[in-house]
Length: 510
Image 1 (cartoon, rainbow, N blue to C red):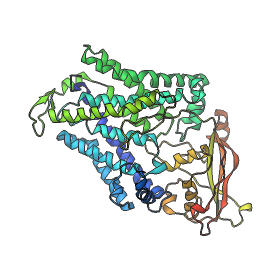
Image 2: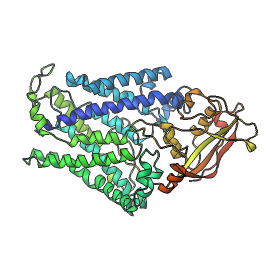
Image 3: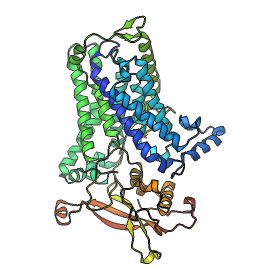
Image 4: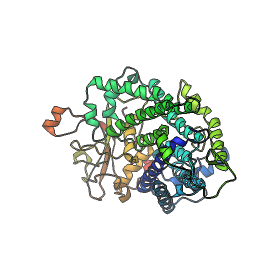
């Protein structure tokens, strides 16, 4: 650090800008492929209905978060246009093209991504109700003020990234300590690899590791999330303490965060949460040698009246204003970290800045899956039932779970949440109707349609308990999962001019 300029963090700036932009490409691509069947004009939870409702309730003070679709009427075509525009701008930032100009150009590009994706998240309802959505939004906003290649990043913005990583990691650690007993008695990861929302190719191998290793995992998790984040701020000591030690402490802290996140990447599918954390953690890695090799600072496109620590004064004023804004907004997440009833993945303002983060305060002990089955037979009592296959969630017993992250399979994730609720969600009953209609856009979200596009006569939902096979079971059966049927959850149902609102699901087992 050199006063107002974080001269040693040029490498961090490059990783942050390009990495965050790459994650926006993933987010917009996920939206492009999935928003229309889930939330489009003919989706399960049509966004247009939400916007119309928000307009009618405006008089009583109920407001949506900011979205362009409040001013430009939503259509699927406009949604597609917005996604493609976001992908193009993100790709330019990954290539570093806007960063070659004045800092205002890169700033406008990132703010455009932030506003465009917020416009989608604000109308995404339950399908966009994940912590990594607000994390990406906040990261995109902060990235707008990292500047361009014409000057070093400002210290205040780099520190704001450390504060973001701190809230992300320390918040997750505190939610676990305050959550289920399994985190305190060190048994949480005995279950987690098997019961997590979307297992990956190595999840079964991780689950079969010895119990002592799982306890060591929990200890390592607590250390990485409760102790290490404090040391991310160590490079600030470099302003007063000479020598490389403060920077090295911050870099080691960042490396520990990155290592733990890579383990989560290898053993699960958590959309872009882990990859975003990895990118953000790089913000604490300072490389003085790289800063020295950078040579003299390039002349800005429009030379300002004067420079302060090689930073144009107007840009320093803007970034300092962002820092002051965060000092005010951070009161609420800081208070939440100390609260006994800590909120998880909560936003305290409409712009989703300075959020509270956290995940997996409790770990489920068994995996209950809702399996959707249908038949072409007219008599459901004597029918042969066939399963629909999902891309990410367990289904076929012999199939090795695939790696999808950082891509986000929204339908598969919400299918995992179904058994955790007291009753079925409205979107699920609408989903069953779409399958009875053999809706092509909905079928494209699945891995397998047993009827090749034809309409089934009946449909039902059945719950199963899934468990990973042991090594011996795998050798005998070549199956990765074993399962036992629990109960019929819904149905059989057939389509006779019935709308989703006419279906009344019963209560489910936890």
